Length: 388
Image (cartoon, helix red, strand yellow):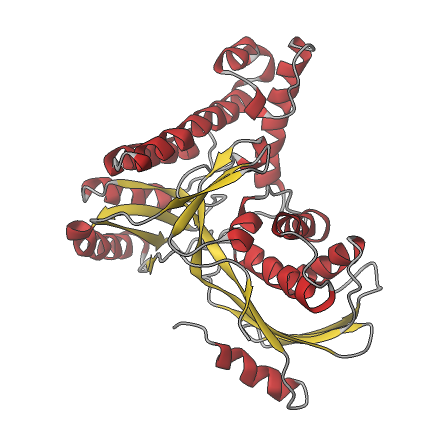
């Protein structure tokens, strides 16, 4: 069910003395293609969705944040001057954003807040980035006279993940949540920060996510291990070419990778092989979209899934199964979306095949795994904003 302003306001009024504040929203995101390329300086191709986070916020004249999570029915309060902050991760996101905004010189003061979201948890749609972006945008508006630019707000969310949550993520999720534009996908160059909007109106096709409902957990070693692999390969290439500026895999070539293949080892080689291929695929999808060639877009999506499954090894049995169902149903394109280890497949489906595909996916997945996957239709929406 779609989250509304009233859902949040009614809880805010109940928990904070019947008064009201300002309401802000920020979306989750999908990523058409370009997975695990953001922290490698490559390209990504995300879009904001209509699901997201909504928060009501009212300054309270103290140095304390008093926060209520509507979804979790959980309350906490913490000082914005405390360097440790709260323990629960859903409050640490807010605390991290507060501290990062303060570090930028924004004179943040204490506030009361209630928040809720309708981004499906564990679906790889980045509910955490939606929460970070919502509060970064809100604090910039309430306390910073909107002086902080959008890309810096995205970096506030990224820094929150790094310093307060323990996920060494790239910039894509927060970028998409802040910069989203209804009816447009965005190609972001994660090395330069330059981006371009691409109108998304695929006549005859639609995007749909199939959520495996397998737990999606990035904190800890699986995500960071893969990032470390990429960094090791980039360093190995840089050592052989001191005359070149090589900071990430984006700065390397296929020839470079083959040159260091034996010294980096098979696992790191496979990780880097996927990233270089994914960089090429994102650019190929941009060309295909401009030409209206959705079959080519779909072909690149299937190649990405194969790479994520076999080379980057972030798939799982359930996601590979859903990808196979998509192929069997003649879906144009299908792949894992998000960091991996669970979550969704994103599927580009011809309109006339849509119903058969979702029916088949639900039926066959339930027959094999004992539960139905969740179908999430994708509508591309706007980025972080003030609602009222």
